[in-house]
Image (spheres, one colour):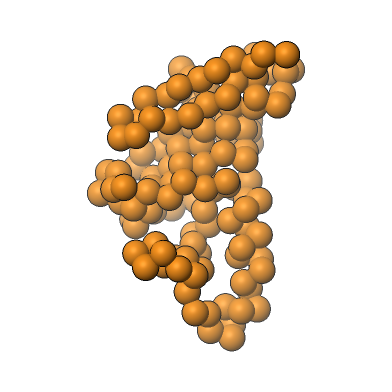
Length: 130
């Protein structure tokens, strides 16, 4: 699905700047890696799964929708703004973080399960039910 002229990547955590080194989206496969890449392969795969950082540069090729890191973390750690649904959208850089902390109950912004509807990007949320 193209979004804003970019390839859409829905992932567990924010993809890294080296995402295209590992994944070939067009051919739906993992790339063959050079010996140097193989040294870093596990770190790269782990960062795709567990990354809590975000790209500081604009991503020209991919638009990334991800969870794993609660959006208020972006506000507290990086000073980034959240929208009315308490998610961080950076359309210019090409990502939306949709983890709103369904598992947390001590922040007023948390305690919701969040999804994004395509292609409208409308937010759907369910309040946590204990």
